[in-house]
Image 1 (tube, rainbow, N blue to C red):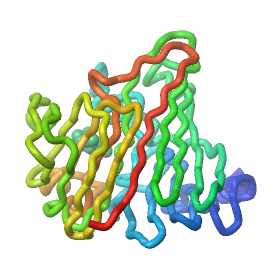
Image 2 (image 1 turned 30 degrees about the vertical axis):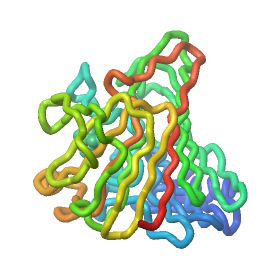
Image 3 (image 1 turned 180 degrees about the vertical axis):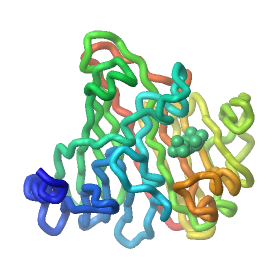
Image 4 (image 1 turned 90 degrees about the vertical axis):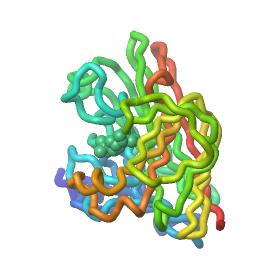
Amino acid sequence: MGASESIAQLDATFGIAGIARVVAGNGGLPKVVVTGAAAAGEMYLLGGEITSWKPRGREQALFVSAASKWEDGKTIRGGVPVCFPWFGNKADDPKGPAHGFVRAKAWGLDSIAQKGGAVTVSMSTASDEGTRKLWPAEFRLVLRATFGAELIMELEMMNTGSAPLRFEEALHTYFRVGDVTKARVRGLDGIHYLDKTDAFREKTQQGDVVIAKETDNVYLDTEHAVEIEDAAMRRRIRVSKENSLATVVWNPWIEKAKAMSDMGDEEWKEFVCVETCNVGKHGVTLAPAANHTLKTIISIASA
Ligand code: TA6
């Protein structure tokens, strides 16, 4: 079955007229387009990657690079990449794909459901011959994304094997901002973090996080919500979460952005990543047949 036929097949099976369709997106890649009463959104089967959320009456909340690649097996630059089963470099294999392998994998579409004005899209991926070569474990990973007045993301991990396993995970969200140099992230004051730009040295956050240079901080032992204050777009984006003990704040700044082939030289100004995670010492250990759900709820208010 060719790509266009399978897209038509998926649309026939899961599409909801006037609410959600499966269509060919960038690079001909299949995506779900949501046009619900409360919000519009998009989610690609490549990586189970959300690339758009626009609550009714509000501006787009997510950033996607104009230079992103759109190819099977490649990662999308922007939106909400799913990092799993490791974060950053693979500890025991520097050649392993950064941030794990599911963000470059084709996921399956499981369901599309409408409730009130919100639409929930559920996609999943699981262990197979390819994943076992990189990570010898049996798993099923489901991402449920609810596009409504809030964006709710639930990443459910199930250990489908007979041995305990340990993994890291992150919803690596790229939030669109008007001007990152005029934005700040609130809610991390006094929190310990590892500074990835300074050999992972442990430091303590003083006040709000302001972006005035390359920033790559892994905040530890933090379960509470944070807020992105975006003065240029006069809005506040609130990121609350459950079952997550770490938060990462990232912006590549000028030089790193220039060095990235899938990011425009000036695009570093247009986003900040605030990532809901379980990484490092907060990696999750799961017994056979057990499951764990990381949840994040995003809302926007005028500032
Ligand atoms: O989450 C922050 C980070 O780990 C940074 O170190 C930076 O590498 C970023 O992710 C993007 O990673 P990527 O593999 O998508 O280029």
